[in-house]
Length: 490
Ligand code: ZN
Ligand code: MN
Image (cartoon, rainbow, N blue to C red; front, side, top):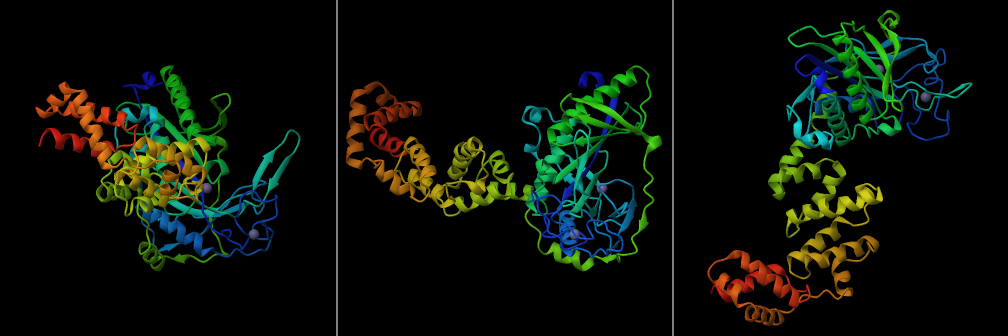
């Protein structure tokens, strides 16, 4: 793909992301917001769009949107208002959607792309790591009903209708499909962090439309943009963009004109198909909603500022400083707010916070992956993980014994690491025994022993290995090495 555009066309990608807020009730009525209920059981005259029903604002949704905006560095205008966006479609029977037109809740701001947000295979060739994607605005609106199309008929479920929905609009600042992928990942991370949304794309809690345009290198003005619809996953966003950029580049190569249009992504076939061109674009005839008063925001903004959660980037820095873990490890641990919490609980008061991090990343995450569970469903408590690491650090068990204790703890989470180590017969060799093994190893290996006396550190590892063998893995390698040095370099 890149060969078709390298040095020839500039790519500008912008994203419109719709995110359902995590609230108890809907945007303009008291119906519950829940996923997976019987169709059309969470409804009332307001969210069914019946004539004469009056909307009432959900203050919690407004507060959450302001909070999201603050996390993303947005400004909130002192007064915001509500507008009707007119269109005719069965998923919106009152024939308009209540949204925000010229005075949205959030303006400006940006999404910093974090290092682990890219697909693994491209992490190494990112042109601008640490780039921030500018946001245009975030407004709050109501979600529409969900229609499902069967062979000969369609059904519609109003449980979703009226769910508070943020629309997050970016500037056309994104220049590659991988950046678009990273943008969505980073945005999602911040939204989940702030408790604003679960942003689960599989449940339709986060949905996105993409627009993309190409222009010759050196041209200021953006090319005609093509909007892509029906993108149901982050990988669909990335794949559709790869396809669409190549399609437009080939068209431009052949001197064809790109028309402003909307295309649908077919994930099975892996191509975009024309839906409509600009000529049949909607005229939404926005007008202020006479049923809803404008909202004055300064107090709400102050309240939200006083209660902002730590941002992912700040957490990474703090983990590096407070627990002495590497930047990479800190990024992995901080990538999921619940994982970060688990780690902190385990690391606090542990004999080695760094070792706790190693166990989480090298052992625990693999288990979660294999079992396809989240950290909140993890059978190993943070207390037991700390206890396990403490046993290793105190020399009670070796690393390889710890792996067996770890596996047993997953099966019997009520037991403590010490109980299990004892039941497995893992007791530290007593020091007299170890001294005897060290003597024997030195006697059996006079060559390496001489090298250690002369200052060769590699030979220490060799002798330590011999002692470990003699002790059948029971000795603590750190104590053994210290014993060897004490004996030969005193
Ligand atoms: Zn309702
Ligand atoms: Mn919208």
